[in-house]
Amino acid sequence: MIRFTRLLTLLAVFALIVAACSSDSDDDTTTTAAGGEETTTTAAAAEETTTTAAAAEETTTTAAMSEDPLLFAASLPLTGDFAIPGSKHADGYQFCVDEINARGGILGRQVELLVEDNRSDPEVTVSQVQRQIEVEGADALLGTFSSLLTFPASTVANQNDMMYPIPSGAALRIWERGFQNIFYFQQNAAELIGFSPVSMIEYYTETGVIDPAITTTAIVNADDFFANAIVTGLVGGEVAIPDSDEVVTVEGYLPTVGIDVVYQEQWPVPFTDWLTLANSIKNSDAEMVVAATASPDEAISLMNAFATVQYNPKLVWMSQGAQSEFQETLGDVANGVTIHSAWHPLADWEGVLGGEVYTNTDFIDGFTESFGRAPDEDEAIPFSLCQGVEQAILGVGSTDNVAMSEWMHARTPDDPVKTILGDWVWDERGLPVDRSMIMVQWQDGELKFVYPVGEFPGTVDLVYPKPEF
Image (cartoon, rainbow, N blue to C red; front, side, top):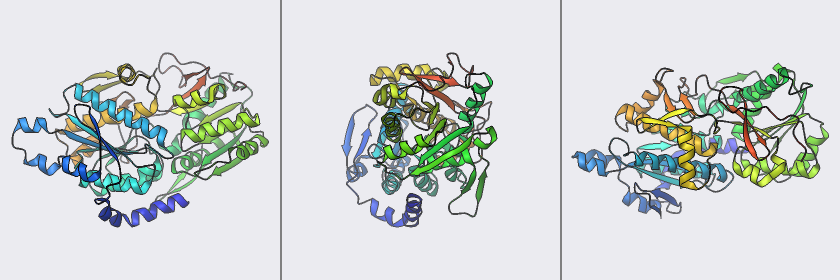
């Protein structure tokens, strides 16, 4: 509630923040030019070197236009609570821009990427997005990580008629405001994510892998936009939409399958008392644990606490943990943990980049060669988003952001945005149509694809119950 109040206050004083932000020279920015060279500059220096949209309009020759790069800009949490996924999002964006430039750019122009560290702070995010629009003259915005930061960032973009594609901002309160400029590049809003793990449990119960059926669960979560929304979707409740009288009622997935919640707890962010929380969950004797975390660090801390108190439930589902750092840090403790995911290496969707077919396998091979490590979903999601932005610009023939938003809304199943995360078509809110999450599980150090079964080659059975530490 404190964080939500903070957001409302933030939006109320937005005009004051904007007035002050142009004089703020303390925020470091990383600009990657078309040639790949990175320089760290202040906002003042960036203002002197970045070509604005007005300057671009004054260009009179095709040759001059081809020399003037398009500017893609993102405010990301490279430090702070969301640093792990935020840094990975930056790598996903960077690799996409590199791949676009290697194919000749967009509309004959190379692409320059500007990434600024918002330090996981909503106020910093607001000032950075405003500056990227008004001072840097960004041609396109690339979304940030987390619902907490996405809510105010998308408001700024909407006020400035800029399209704002979102990689990781699932809470329904973002999507029920009537904005026509936002598009989600994951499969479901947070309140709807529970459909996938519950469907997985039903499938494996029907096939005898889960026997007897699970009847009790503990639900714990961070006091965070995203995490709270997941819990609401599981147990049911009402979602109040800020700045309106609208309330969305969510029925709840767990009651429909006969799973009782025997323990429920919310922790404040930041949080350190993981051992006390783990012991409380253990004392509930819950067969299953649902942990809706705001960051991978929280998921790691909770699992370490389970190991310390020797609590090993039969099934653990977490909202974070598909990152390689999760398994590398936890080792055997990660074994058997399930996570919902937007992406998996075996889901070889076929996308488009530079007007040519570009598959998930192409992405994995290219990213691994460029970065010396395999990608995970926090790099794949922003790459998919960047593909969508490129297709919107090509579809419109310009960087007219209003036209780009209209073009995105006009996609159909026969003419979708095609990316390494599959085909995208959005409803009037900007949420994907007919998409569901992938369920993955750590099995002996590898992240296996366990549900839906048979949609792609390589699916394996769920390991149940969760192996001992």
